[in-house]
Amino acid sequence: MDDLEPGRGGGKRDRTARLMRVASLLSQHPDGMRPKDIAERLGMSVRNVYRDLRALEDEVELPTWSEGGRWGVLDAAFLPPLKLSLQEAMAVFVAARLMVRYADKYDPDLGSAFEKLAENLPPALRSHVQRSLDVLQEAPHDTDFTNHVHLLTQAWAERRVVEIEYEGAAYEGRPGERTRRTLRPWLIEPSLETHALYLIAWDEDRAGMRTFKIERIRDVRLTPRQFELPEPGGLERELRRGWDIIADQPPVRVELRFSPSVAERVLETRWHALQDTDREADGSLRWRTTVSGIIEIRLWILSWGDDVEVLAPQELRDQVREIHQRAADRNSG
Image (cartoon, rainbow, N blue to C red; front, side, top):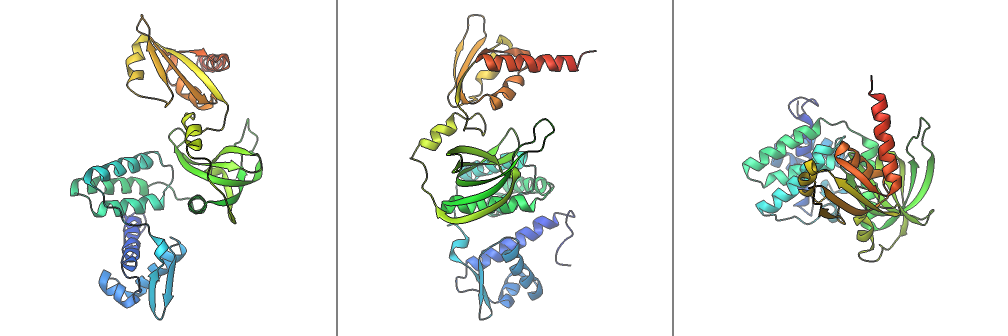
């Protein structure tokens, strides 16, 4: 039996690695290879080579070609190879580890990237990559989500306008509204707060930048229309105001006072790009920043319990007080 059963001994990972070896071999032979030669080179049966070639086309969506009994991959299928130092590889590994820790579903592209990264790493670091793959493999699969990410990535890379069907968030027991949107994909961003991926795009129907949770996208269609990116630095300035993902809300100046018992811990981390701080005579900490809306920063403030006081804006101060009061009422008695 050439393929191990899913869930036994990393069988899915073994299959992914084998598909990668086939794709890598084809990428090294621009004139293509015969399935018989691929089988001999990789120690496989010809039947399984044909099966993997079909999987590369249908599942991985790798642009392959076949002619005169030879198979190959198009030049656009792979980006140029990277030559990383050990320190650079560690930086990439740490970034990917963050994705693995917060992923709530299996990402085949992340798994494939990890496999490639592991090929040229020292044994100690390679073992960490393999353990990360084991963790990632346990996450559930979502084919629709993966396909949507692929299409949005293509649209972003080719600067093509997309049309999506989007289901808004449910509110107070009511299902979210489904709408059709015409978008210019500007960026795909992960959120540490929600463990999800978001599309940041220009919404042509609403003439403004909007944020869309990719898990709520029900359909994606690429159009032939292309678009120009915003002026250099414009998008980055907007994103600097976001606390996590949301950067399309009016700017709000937030001012907090942290108690002396947590002031040092707060200072250990730069929580926001635009923050500034002052120590008070009693050891407390004044903390200020400007953010896009108050929804996301409110969750962070609540995580500090009674060690933080909201000084401004008044709306945020009222919301935090009401939330604490409801929590106290719910947990009393």
